[in-house]
Length: 513
Ligand SMILES: Nc1ncnc2c1ncn2[C@@H]1O[C@H](COP(=O)(O)OP(=O)(O)OP(=O)(O)O)[C@@H](O)[C@H]1O
Image (cartoon, rainbow, N blue to C red; front, top):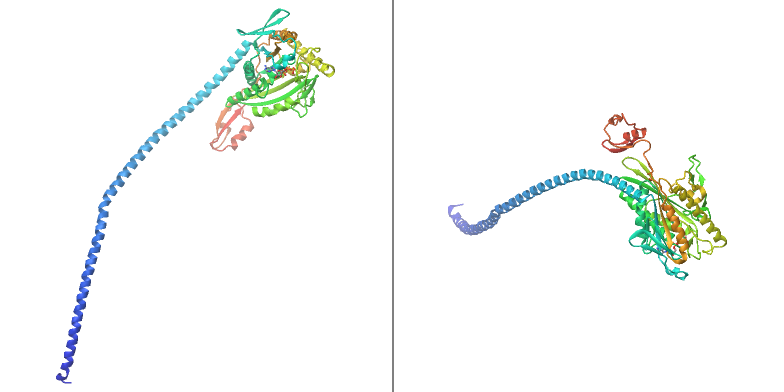
């Protein structure tokens, strides 16, 4: 092809190229614009971000400063707290140590105080005499109003609590007893006089408290009382358990009770379901002591427990009405409380016994309207009261033979009434003229009892023939008996066994005999 033939084609190409170049340039222009926009946008974006970041960065030191300050303050607070608690704990520990030292000291002092209290108490009771005769004058009640001879002939002296005057056949007869309770005296006032004897029983003495007097004069009221106004028995038992609770860190006690009545010289068990009949026999152990085979003896853990038993005792007691008293008790009722004590430190054992006796009424047979069975009862009652009088008389005269075996009543009181024991008799009297004969009789008997000297009371305490010592032992890794000096004590095999079964570091308390 020639050069002339190609020229138009070349021109067309050149035009086309020109157009394309323009288009290209336009495109490039667009792109440049977009690039600029993009660059601008990118620049804007990082600026904002940077600003935000910068802002946050600039805020950081102050946050850090706050955190640092808070942390520092916290640390100092923690340090202060630990210093404070450290000191406090040290102080508390020192206090605890001091307290346990002081506690030991206190326990020691307390022991001494208890021993002193017992000694002073003993001296007081001995000063008062180991046989105390109290008299309670019964108030004139509505029920007594129907009787003739309503004049009051018995007067007490507000300035002399031992004196009592009875006006009889125009003559004033004066009596001097250990204590006279006027008709308005409360059950609590009467018990206050008896309380030291109950404490003595816990200490290991044998004590007998009995109410004596004509029928209807208030013996049962004084000894048993009512639900709202309990008498000596309930108050004594309450006091006994309170005292035991107070001593629980030093002594343990076991309290048991039995209760019998003597009706027509027949002994009945008031703790049995139907008041089972019993007999008194010579103990086959050869000691010559008396015992009552089959008698129910109940261990009591608390005052509440004993209160549950009391209604059975009361309902089993034989009571009939006489002309003198609608609910006359025709029997002697005995509540016997035995208190076995063990000293936790020395192992010494005490045996206290408390006989609380509500005697049947002393009465003149013709006056109480007693016939047939009632007559037999009255004669038996009078016979046993006579036997009691004989025992008192023999004690008063310091006779070698005391006729305890003349009646079942004195049989049973043998180990708590008499030499070496403590006794209180509450003589109940009516203040009415119609009863003046009985009142004089009772007061004369009371004065006889007043003259009895029982001598110093003997505490029933047993150390088992040897002194028991308490020993505190720590078990070593290889337990051997050589851990303890055995030169003066023997360790029984029982304790060897205890040693070998204890874990290392265990504390074991051992009583070595
Ligand atoms: N101090 C007193 N205060 C109020 N009432 C009393 C007092 N003493 C006795 N009584 C009442 O007098 C009545 C007779 O008393 P209680 O039964 O105690 O006599 P008692 O001597 O036991 O008689 P008995 O020997 O015949 O059994 C009872 O109703 C009793 O509540």
